[in-house]
Length: 304
Image 1 (cartoon, rainbow, N blue to C red):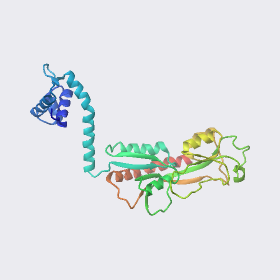
Image 2: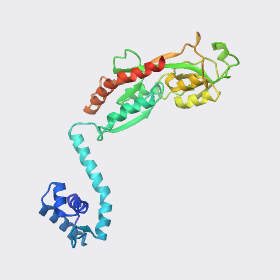
Image 3: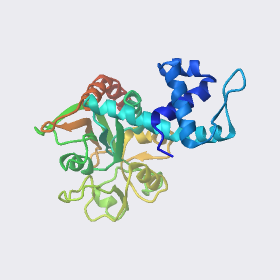
Image 4: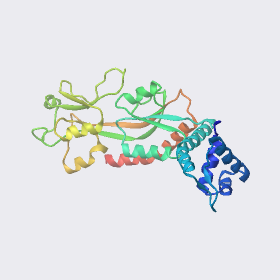
């Protein structure tokens, strides 16, 4: 038995699906004799009848039904491979690596990306979470094509799109402090502070909004940090968009005041200027620019 071809499997599958040779030929944009010959050759090579031609509609035999079922995965993979080859021939990237930083409002950012990549099935999205210095480090280590986070203002190595301003408030659960007086560094020095773990691997150690000398617990993400603070285990800074409901209903208390005024960070999309960007990356950049005003408006409304 010689090896059968993908073309023969495609013709056989089309005949089973369409219930006849003429309908299959029309679906494949081939001639009736070509489809008939391909299926006959497949049957000769396998040494088994695959089709029952005795009725008005052609039907698969038991062997034919079994073969078609097994062939589905191969035919689908071949179709995906053809799409991918066309994608590469057009010069489009097979993948894009995007890092979402800890300051991002996840639902809005993921919706922005989802709306774009739904139109780019040939480009695989590799999405990663990083915190504090991690996003920028991944970008400069050539491990990301684009990041959504804060960057140092005025960095000439980067192109950026402003996505909005993120307010971080110092908060604690009611009763974490013995009274309602505005906290001072001295009053918080013996209280547990929850801080986010920096995912940068080789950046210099840097303290972010930390009370020196205070006991600390470290977590990997903002949602875990929020849960720790809600349970009265610590205090810490959290993005306002993440805690609006808790501030409103009293489950969290703002500690903002003269000594702890809160922080506002600029959230941006950033990419390197010294790297070429393919057509999909360029279209994504334009998509982000088009969607940025809505995201800025949403974050602005949440700060007011």
